[in-house]
Image (cartoon, rainbow, N blue to C red; front, side):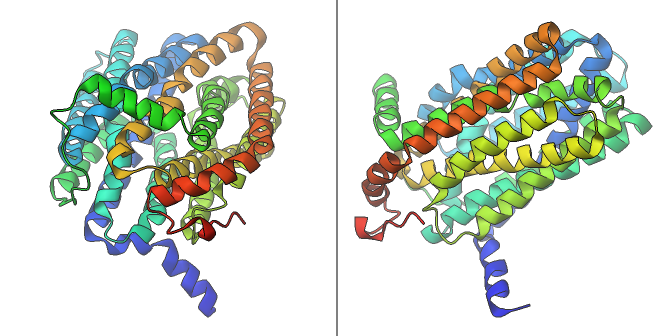
Length: 430
């Protein structure tokens, strides 16, 4: 191994030198494996119980739509409350939700309405959990230069789980049933809560418990949408969320009708998408700087669109695997690249509020797309639905690229004001 390769490898994991962040990274990674296994098991179980693409869309809608309505409210509260305590509460509630799902399944009491209700409960919890998880990262890092790396490592952890979880589910579902996947998620949340309790985060912003809630919300809204670079990033993420992520809802139908296969193939497709995302996340983590990520966002939208269009009209397994890898790579460039740019443009005092709008965009708009995709698949077919979604993502990427020069000019002073650059002269968008 050359010196430069060794240097790049050490840079890839540099944020793990922080003991607080290392415990957080491991705990969330273990939990995410169970979460992905549960997601695959739920999708497969819903389709087996109902045989309806529409119902797959409804489940995805209920699990994510609370993010659209509750995340902006959660952002204000998370900026006012200790983020560690928020996460202990939210992930304890997620532990209970997974436990109830496990018990109902093992006792053969599970009905479709249980899945609907439990999906809605988890969606409400995640509306508070996700902004807090994004915002606490800065409090776990001692060196601000490691912040970008920590954000990317969060995604590496998530996407290792995205690769492992579906693979595990693909083995467990046909052999021992969906209930074991739910049990795995319950155990994962238990370890996540233990790791959160052990953290000793730094407090970066003073408490705002005495400030008016609506004034805080308005301040966060103006800060986020009153600055063109932040708004442009969120606009592209909105398109990706609405039209790019619903492919997950359609996969059980696609696997059954196009590939004429079962849960094993579904798990393999999700695992390959996770592998593509993992490669992308490692690339992002190895980058020395956040500057230049805006170019990757435009590329991300194009990759997602191209991958979905390729997936639309193939019944060949090897082609579908390539398409899933491309989609996974594009999604991670968009989601992690967008998150990194936003976190590098935001003041610590506003972090949770800005990231709550990110959560609303990435996770809150997605369920509308899932519901739309499920309905379209019933009426015009899975292939044409995937095609339409792919074209929309390409259009979003083209719009972002057309405005990339304005983004760069206006982002420089924002990076300086947030403390991530010392002067405008340091701006470098290569």
